[in-house]
Length: 503
Image (cartoon, rainbow, N blue to C red; front, side):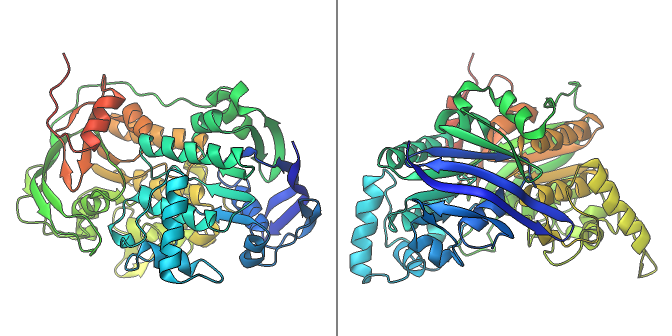
């Protein structure tokens, strides 16, 4: 296999941490190459150096045998390197063609561009209507926009960061078919994912990073998912477990909840009803954009709800905002960790204070108790293995997975009676995901009513007692999770809300 990109001794250090330490490996033409590692292992920094977002301190790269030193993403794109980021960079109010034009150096006329979008998207099995408004697209369709924007550049290397985190199983198969077609045509793909079964199915080679260093490489098809996880963390992987007990009394009751979304491109909730008992985990699945954010806002108090729709221990709480709900032990962790769950430029201590001031007693007569707040942040860091120099560091300085551990840990350690989490292990490595799931199982074991909203069906089946699906703002009738098949779940996610339980 002819080498396309060679990385030799790349090193990048930040204050208090060496993100990449003498990293060397090569990617061949047409190769699908996995980059594996725990959160904070250095994957993001490495791909940012390849894409021209970060300048290495030392080391060098060659692309097709010539020195490759992109000073900015524009230079990387001109050399044939494209990247699909984990967080989409699209404007909801613009249409598909307008969004794609914004990412091009010299976009053609709109009519010409629209024709190219149709041709390329259909050729690669990712059909897109260039005239559709992006705000009306599903998460899977939005990702298609990002991918087609890259493919119009005719890349030689395509970098993909957690590309399946917002996709249904059917959409994942469509994406993999596209990536295999690109590979067969000679495009190399550098693929980052924490979903190890996907790595085993798709990738030809895997390079493993740990604490910024390359520690191993392998053919992932010859390894089990557990073996890959253990290569990443260097120890045996913990498997979450829980003693199953009978749930207690109903803690949270939601009855005929209908709520218009505050977002013009959001999803209105329609006649949602369910109960969650003490010690029970209710898993809620669904494709992104079907009302998950709106449901969390209704339960957390960010969106006031009609009288009588939401009750805790039989008492209506719909009129209470987030802080009064925290006071009565209804806590929540939203999906968007940077900007919604955490303030990017505030320290971890300040972010701990934001939601824990009431329950942890971090304020006294209007004065902030900084030592206590710092102590609480340190407890979160230690209990959830958050990789950071300390609680004084800003939230934005953490890798996505480490910030996720901090956000979930902050709520778990406040001992809620009801906890609602949206995408609890999004972008988190296998070891950290196992730890987060175990924390949720332990909470339920201690009598908390837990609602887990997630697009990871394996996760929901692993932790849930009962399962329901959101589709266009409607919730299916919750059913026991044990024994549900993927076919039944797929039907529920597609809107078949009144399936008969199989005999």
